[in-house]
Image 1 (cartoon, rainbow, N blue to C red):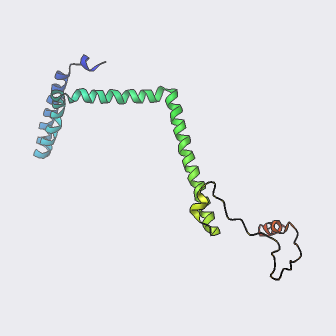
Image 2 (image 1 turned 90 degrees about the vertical axis):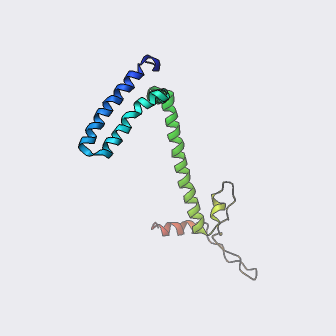
Image 3 (image 1 turned 180 degrees about the horizontal axis):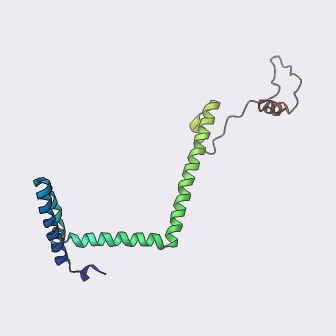
Length: 158
């Protein structure tokens, strides 16, 4: 049904007349303020017809209904909704990963902003094992599994 197929003047005038009758009842039961407010609401349908705003309201309503029915019944739109959900999920996951990177960098005493940027070289960890001693003499080399043994001991595995 199109806008021009409906007899809007009698419809608007009828709604306004019924509203004014109900406004009189509101005035008798709840007082002058309630009656005036109800009369103001009752005059809006006729005012919308006379100013041409009724056609705009019709166009907005039909556009909303068209959008909703297109959304509900279109597989392509649902694919778009799924892609939007995946995008939002990826934003949340990447934010959590960035937060972990920043907290690890803070715990290690490194610059947290530099650690969060991809491609930024990280400070090498201190070498586990024998360190050179002043005077040029090196201690005997420890076996290569000492750092692994330390990790296992900290976790309660021996």
